[in-house]
Image (cartoon, rainbow, N blue to C red):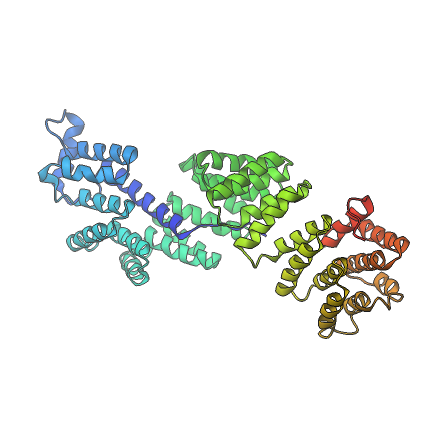
Length: 481
């Protein structure tokens, strides 16, 4: 399974706006390739051969870029009021750049008004239409966004901006094959477009074309040697190939670029955990929690790390946070139940397993554990009432029914060892041996209990949580009797 990427709409929009602003600065600011002012082009040529005698358009662009880089969009916009010469007040390039900076500053009304004005002056201008797409997306105006995308495609089927937008639509629908087609079209006109390359690489990653994805992300690094997403995905690809050290090195480079990036911290922690660097993993996941304290996943990862190290109090605290933030993540309830059993906190364990049973009624482990916990709480009546309700809905010929029936009325266990030994499903067989052992532990029969716990452990197949409980029992870590 490929690890999922958690990308918010806000992050996506921020990336779009950043690309627009940078592209404008580089292409408009220093080449004036989109200008409709032939006099400005002449002026640019002149400035290459002699000193400027007056504050020029190029001077303003350089000062604008400096303000944008140093103090942000609002500072850059202020220069239009204080430093822009009157003769450039209606300059197409500078108005377009002003619109783009307004988008970065989230002044969408101003940006939209400028786009409308510029589009009227040059209806075929694809840069203006691309910016209009970004504005519509930020407004959440799907109809306007679609309209602007279609206008771009009418002008040029291979328009990079439009095809990237369509690619993103398909990507978020998990239609990776179609998304890749759009990203490839975007690369026809702009073979070094970072967004299109990133999209194509992500599609190949999720389509499990790892070799092709790796080539694409390495190409991105040739264009942009510090590209965070390229480092991040090269780490994911290495991790999929079980190359944990390489994965960790790539994730560390991504993290060095963006230490406040949630995904960078999550991935780095995961790779460090597989390398056995538990302190580094804990630090990374703790940082991820600080970045997004209301998202459950980092708590789940850190809980598992604590659990693995037998730091049970911290593990339970994190698992409880997981279910607080995501009540449907019932595996966290399962872990709470297991650790509560270790602490012999029968009520907490029962309540946790009840949550599991509410969400997955097909797993026999949960009603068996709930019944067991009721007995350990000294409430045999509720144990029988609960197990009786479950038994009524079960197949009477199943091994699961027979085992719960034994817990219900403490009889009929004698045929079970033979039936269990004949099973071909190893996981279910291991579970049934465990619950047979637990039955003897509860109702007298320590010698039989120890025999069946040992059988579970000898299977060496920890694909079910009962295996861990059996290990604890045989190693004397928890009595469970």
